[in-house]
Figure 1 (cartoon, rainbow, N blue to C red):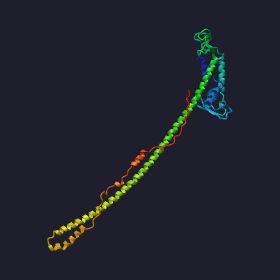
Figure 2: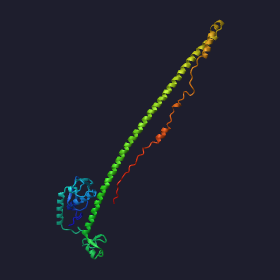
Figure 3: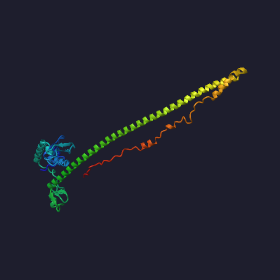
Figure 4: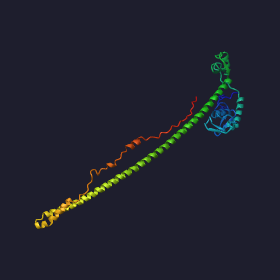
Length: 338
């Protein structure tokens, strides 16, 4: 009895049950099913072993020195970790095995209805039971004897079916193994992306800290130079203010002497005038010949000595760049899968 998926076409509860008993790898009814923990999905033991061997090519046998392995469930992509026994360490699902046995007994007791087996389009009463190797299509015996395939090479349908089913299973195993490798690469790339973001944030923080330190140093130097300019300003203004006070005092004395001289010049009496005139003249002459006050030099008020050239610093800032470092070789192991 061929228990392929789709053998029942009447939409009965048995058909719904059959769909639940199909292995997602070989698309056949389970054979010695096992339970994939912890996701509880079922696989044939052979299919599980094929997927496991594809994902763990260096794991050879139950006596291998490798302690265990891992692969992903083809139904939900959950990662399954195995011990040193590999697939043989998984628990068998006896309940599913018993259900399959009951299902097969039920199917074997049901008579086949017309239409449950594909029929030939050219010979409506003939079942498709052989395979034309030349044309690569299934056909019936009448087509081989009298029909379009009488000169073609044919083979038993079941043998071709088993061969292509085996080839399809191998392709599925290859795809599953390839998907695992691709998932591994994706995980590595995602980790690299996250590491790149983390390292970039750390580099930004370090760069900001260095520039903040440089800015603080510039502010400190600016405050120092401003203090020196302020001190020079205070010294010069204090000296000039002292000269202003001295000149004001001299002006005040000279003004009083002028008033005294004018009053003496207005005296009409000769005797009275002569009594003070000589001493007054002597005082005026001495005042005019007296010690001269200090003066400031030309350009004394200039502060050009405190000009600072920052061209070299500007050039140094423009020339700032990251330190050249040896580039590490990155190895990327990528494979193209067909």
